[in-house]
Amino acid sequence: MLYRKLGKTGEKVSILGYGCMRLPVFDGDPAKIDEKKAIELLRYAIDHGVNYVDAAYSYHRGMGEIFLGKALKDGYREKVHLATKLSCKRVNRKEDMDRFLNEQLEKLQTDCIDFYLLHAVKKSYWEKLKAFGIIEFLNSAIAAGKIRYTGFSFHDELDVFKEVVEAYPWDLCQIQFNYLDENFQAGIDGLRYAAEKGLAVVIMEPLRGGNLASKIPEEARKVWDRAKTKRTPAEWAFRYLWNYPEISVVLSGMSEMEHLKENLRIAEEGKPNSLSTEEKT
Ligand SMILES: NC(=O)c1ccc[n+]([C@@H]2O[C@H](COP(=O)([O-])OP(=O)(O)OC[C@H]3O[C@@H](n4cnc5c(N)ncnc54)[C@H](OP(=O)(O)O)[C@@H]3O)[C@@H](O)[C@H]2O)c1
Image (cartoon, rainbow, N blue to C red):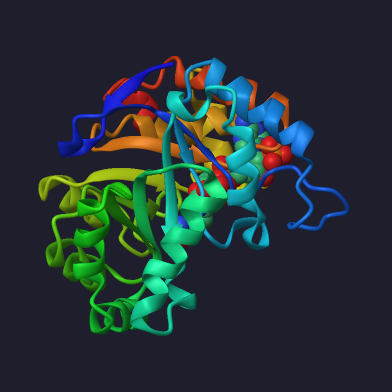
């Protein structure tokens, strides 16, 4: 596993992070996590160097954090940086922010969340949270030792992204980015902007939720067929991302051991600026 510095925090994080939005489930029901299989996957990842775990209040209909509280027992909590998110959608009054954070600490069975992010920020959520005093809330949660670092995940346009970046001394942001989404939402300009402002960047949906491994765009297939180097579709997608020095962690939601093992293998080689000019074009 390779590690990178997480922006100004100075923390060293694995370049592959475990996204907990797509854990294995029974009967296709997100609330029914196959805990045995999910624990095996998560602990295998941690045993092989993954030290960044990404959750959210809403994942698996609220069961994801409860699962993680159990999965990170037996010393695994101490081996990872745990990230989770405040559900912007569910905050309807000032008191909700404290209430949700306390509930999350309890579900996760931890005293402190390493990275606390606002979930899926967009203009309307940002305006709502500002009005409820989100900045004071974050400062007081840090002062109380309930969270260590702050950030936000983002789903809106670039101008909103810049506004949010500038509004608070965030430690990190989480954006959707992959070789097809260079100009989607925050995009490549947002990635560079955040890095210039000292925020670490965490990537979500590197395979567009799996589509870049299963439904390969014709254009990409043609380029890969011409390339001298032969790689799997997932490998091209991850190597494209890790080539950016501005990116600290790439999250993937893995529910199959085969995929986890492949991604761990690819992560061994994901050095910044490691693709040749030919491979990039
Ligand atoms: N904050 C937000 O607003 C937000 C939004 C989206 C995502 N996220 C976070 O970001 C994480 C990553 O996003 P994502 O889950 O969409 O990641 P992703 O890597 O784009 O997609 C995961 C899917 O790709 C498949 N996959 C993974 N590795 C593969 C491989 N080597 N070959 C073939 N298929 C492979 C997985 O299949 P299997 O399950 O069968 O292994 C899974 O279905 C999420 O889990 C979540 O933690 C946050």
